[in-house]
Structure formats: C-alpha cells, structure tokens
Picture 1 (spheres, rainbow, N blue to C red):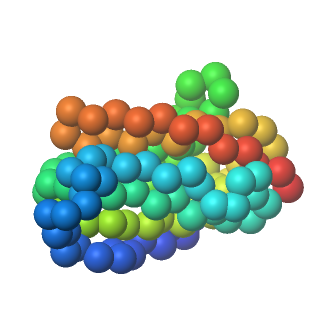
Picture 2 (picture 1 turned 90 degrees about the vertical axis):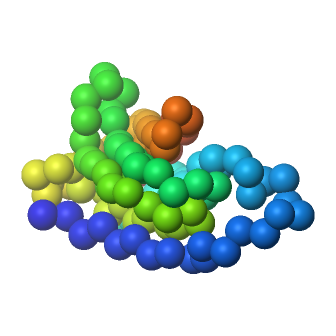
Amino acid sequence: MHNIAASIITNNFGTNNPQELEFILHQNSPNPFTYNTKIKYSIPLESTVSLKIYNIRGELIAELVNEFKDKGSYDVVWDGRDKFGNKAVNGIYFYKFISGSSEIIKRMILLR
C-alpha cells in the first residue's frame, strides 16, 4: 500500500477574489521529486473530485482522490508508489484532476 495524506487547508471562500470562482490545480512541488510530492487544488463548489496519476503510456498508476468534497482548497501527497504499493520508476507522469465538468492535466517528473 502507498500512503496518501490529504488535508483541508480552508473551506471558506469569500466573494472578492476572482480565483475563488475557478477550479485550480497547482503544479506539484517539488518537481522533479525523489520520494514524495504535494499536489494542491481548489474547488469553488462542492463536487465529486478525482485526482489520478498516469504514466507516459496513459496507464493508471495511482488514484489519490475519488470522493465528494466541500468547496475549498486541499493538498494531497503522492509518495511515488503505484496502486499496488510498488515504487514507480523514474520518468514523466501526468496527474489528471476532474471536478464536475472541469478537467485539468499537468505533468511531473519522478527522479530516484
């Protein structure tokens, strides 16, 4: 098994910031990474959220989030392991964020 840590940062959105009305997926940090990396995202509405990791061939490596979330900002840590608990190999990976009708894909690099 791989460890996935998720925590809520805030769930209080005001009305003065235009970004609070957007789905936001931040670049993972650090990138490139060796052992683990943090992915932050924000959702302006409560919705079902999916955050999955894929390799360069499009194969599913890990599912970090697949659940209903309240509006707010969240962060998830990926420990560089696949869905079977094995260490993922060096290379380029894509993380795909889906919330409602919004879909965002970003790239990250694992270097051990």
